Image (cartoon, rainbow, N blue to C red):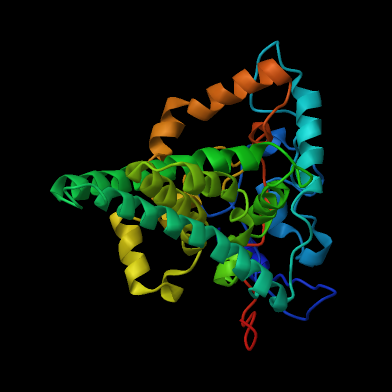
Length: 349
C-alpha cells in the first residue's frame, strides 16, 4: 500500500481503556499483507472502494470493530445444496462472537506457575515415553544394537514428518469448527480466532503462556500410551510426535516474529524448512483462512492445499451434519492488528 492510504494507516492510533500504549495498525491485502477481495461483493459500510478510502479522513482505530468489515453474507461453496446466504450469516455471527477483545495488559503475556505446570506435565510424559522406549529397546539379549538405533532414527524422522501433517489437521479443525464452549479444546478454538484478528500478540507471549493451552488435551493420549504400551517404537513415536505438535505453537510464534528479533539458529531452521517459515505461514493469514494450516515445517501445506483435501472433507462434513466451516466465508477486507505497540511489555516481558 502506498501514498495517502499508507500514511493514514501508519498514523492511526489505538486507544484502549487498559493502557495508553499506541500500536501501529495496518490493513492486510493479498499483495501487501492486507486481506482483500472484490469490493463489489462487500456490503459493510466500513468497506468502501479504494479510491474513496484514499480520500477518507483517518479514523481512530478504537472505532473500528475488526469484524465490521467481514461480510459473511454468502459463502465460498456454491451449489443448489447450499443456502449461501443463511450459511454466510451464521458464519459471520460465529466469527464475530469469537476471539474476545484485544489483550493490552503486558502482564497477561507472562507465564504463570499453573501454565508452567501444564507444560511440565505434558513434556514430562513425552520424555517418559521416549525414555521407556529406549529402555525397552535395550533389555533384550542383544542390547541396544545397530538395528535398534536405525529403528529409532526412522521412528523419530517419521514422527517429525507426520507431526507437520498432524498440526495441519488440528489447526484446520479448530479454525473451522467448535466454539469456546467445546470441551477440552474450547480455549484453543477461541484463541485461534483471536489470533486471526490480533496476530502480533503471539510474538510477545512467554513460552509457557503461549503453548500451555495445547498441553492438556494430548495427555489423554500420552498417559495411556505410557502406562499400557511396551513397544519401543510406539513409545518413542508418540513422545516425539506429541512434543512437536505442542512445540509447533512456538514455531508458529517465530513465523510471526520479525527477523531482527529471531535467534540466528531459528532463522537458519526456517530457511532450511526445518521450521515453518514466515512466508509460508503468512499465506494462511489471508481471509477466509482456508489453507496453509501446517505449522511444524510446512512441508504438507502444498500437498493438502493443492489436492483440495480440506475442501472435500468440509463438503462431506457439511452434507452429513449441516455444519459449515468458518473458512466458507467470502474473502473480503479484514482489518488486522498486525504489529505490537512500540515498546510493549518493556519492564514486564
